[in-house]
Image 1 (tube, helix red, strand yellow):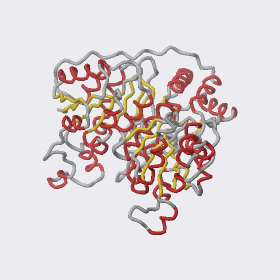
Image 2: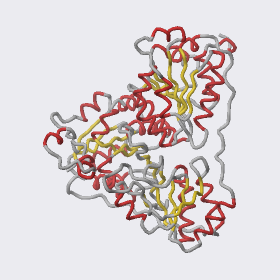
Image 3: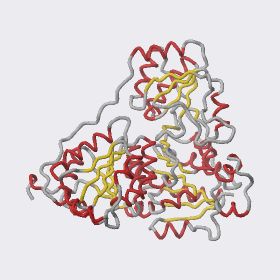
Image 4: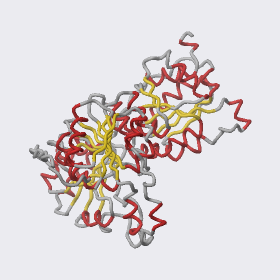
Length: 519
């Protein structure tokens, strides 16, 4: 075909490439076969097959967190989108740009209400900031370009483009025009001056960082403000990506449980929000308020979620004449010797052994606090936490981060219960030969629910209730699961065994899985 006669699928692919989207994570079906066929005519587009749609959406999230660029997903009709929804929810909370392409029946077939017919727009809207169904083949290029622009519009969102099959196989004309990534707006100078005055007022103040403010430049600017004013710096624990370790200034993370978070924030008379919202607890509990700052705390917005929080912090530091202070380098811990294999020991070992530039994808749940504290001494790294709380993001996010940064080590810290939601990630890691080390924190239980049952006022955990959070009879065998997907695997039940296996994983390219049997 001449370019002017290309079909809709090829037009879609070429439009994505023209708009700097060159990765598509896919689990296609019949309605998407034209798109799949077009990959051979458009070799610049990298297609990566995932065995479950939730892996596609989670990997697109991880890729976006590390690059700031959108990846595309390709999903099969309404049920394929439904399988992807949980990690699209997490991507929405992470403010990740994702171009979510969903195939639809051909327009003439929709009248029959065939078995796979569904309300795709209805499925998509709760997790998408932009939804559009292509109305005709000739609109394909413009629609695809609009989807990319919508996904990249600050602060980043899921843009869902629904493509009827007949518009993929019909002549579509030229690709859509290349766009440019919209710049993030900045707050006004008067707003910055007002906040500078507030910080000089003598009130006890904190600065809550989220979004791009948790990248290195934002944290360094916040640290200058801390040095100049005494304001405490807090991190949104569910921010998409946080720079940490080495000589990067440390920030205090908002605790998970509301009592601990409220105690941390109790002295605050004023809280400056940088790409953040007033903090609330993950869940509501009987007799506890859901807000975390004191009821009389004043809030100032330095930068909204759409604005450039890192640059705003730099401007605020300049307005305060804040010095460029030296930051103490984190001290790497010594390797432990002997003792039980606990989450704290695993964090300490990882902190001692990971190379600079490591990316951590952490979905460790009940082990999270111990890991977080012990990773503080690691070399400079990026930390990708849980964002939306939908289980099953850790392995796909690690996969996406490894696709984004192939020269960097990726370590997935994964709870055994959560990891079972998206084990198919291992197959794609093996097929793509990704350098990911997966640490399965195996306690054979949804351990966090042992804590939550009491906190929610549901009473004691009886034997029948206990069965609902128990992961034994049979115990999942992660070694066989990993090997079945083509991933090298080993089990560690002691500190010395874990040091041996993790050291080897840091020396050699992955993927590699270590099942850590927690004491």
